[in-house]
Image 1 (tube, helix red, strand yellow):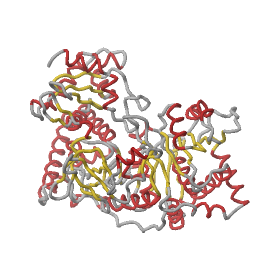
Image 2: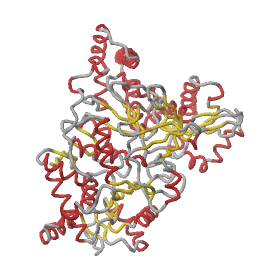
Image 3: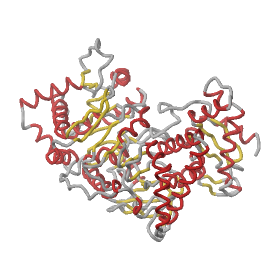
Image 4: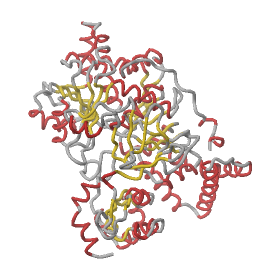
Length: 621
């Protein structure tokens, strides 16, 4: 497909190599090289604000010295409880520049979860986003004797609030300036107080099978992974990136923020999680990383828009997408695209496909990257048919977001690509589990040596828990998580993720959990796409008063039944879903059923909705 890309999608040369043995050293070397260039942008009060590298450097130094003034010592942990903001990155770089360890806390975590994470990490200083997050900290601080100060990014609503142990970010920066002026040599001393083997960040797992575990990543691991991420997905100072996924998750932290730090790509922050669709059209990124849920939402929005278009527009879209599909078939097969098809594809782009790309905001993208969860191969093919390469990667928190990557010149939908440069990946002959080894593998779990020993064997192989296969060309494929594979009462092995990915390809289904372990047949719990199903109901005058009544409507039940029937036709009879139930609760990021990356927690859902599941089996197939 590369021969059909615009000039703007040409792969740039690798960026200038930035030296440094620790992540903050790399940052400060990058500052020296790029001082006047723009590093980060954010939208405030409707206006985009640019931060040059030297602006960021001044803020990072002031915050770092403010932390030192508050008593942060090399090796101490400071936590950040906030949505994805420019200040998040500044605080992270400042903590590490001061010799500290950064721990990110999901903004959806409860006060009790915050307490556990601060206790486990021995947090001494805490950054919070705003009044809402500060309330959580105040609720549990009496149980955190090590916590000295809480620093607030956004103090709106706190004008009349006064507390000796709470301060604003501006106050911290002012303190840092004073402290720095009194001892100018301290900053460089702190910057070089940590070496490559020292702990840099903690990334806590989602805790779906127990208490969250703090994955420890060294500076060496971060720097290695950051550099290899840019090798796998070349980018440089001409690129525009978008930052919107949780920064306490390793994927956005490494593939987004740190990769931009190394490559010099401009990092653009969305206004808030609800404005992603609008902001992506404004930013028009050249490289766009997102989780499957985001790609599914974009596809659903286009599918609904096409249904509302005129018959002529629908015809043009279907023809154009068909032409794009012909190109994709040839490219994936490694065959040349003839002149006639090239001409038709250019016409297809001008007639419809370019408009679809602009509707999403990916018209300048030279590459889309998906990861952190399985994705339907058909969804990847749809994006490829638009003329934009979609590359799938696979990694874990424990592998520092580095594992496998698909190359733009050798895409194979349905696989997770080949092992990233400098990383070993193999399939265990006995269990089929994917094992990974390399400098990117984490140091272990904080305070949990037994769990660490279970995860990293004596030869340094990380046991990922993913079951997969590899072909003769070195392309890996994930079949499922070891713990998620279903063995039916008839002894048939089922990989539920394949069915679930097909279901999520529907614009009316947001997520699904397939059930059937030790059962006679498969069933599914389905979470509908509220916006699209509401539109469906309104267009057909289906009465509903709230989310629950919408899921109970006969027409909605029949709609989802039809979507499941479409999926069933792709699978053998024993692999088909016989019964389903719609979840009647509208789930959000704060709900326990969802992981921070908005995936349904399989084990939790099966326990919470046990009676609903049983009703599908008592009803019979």
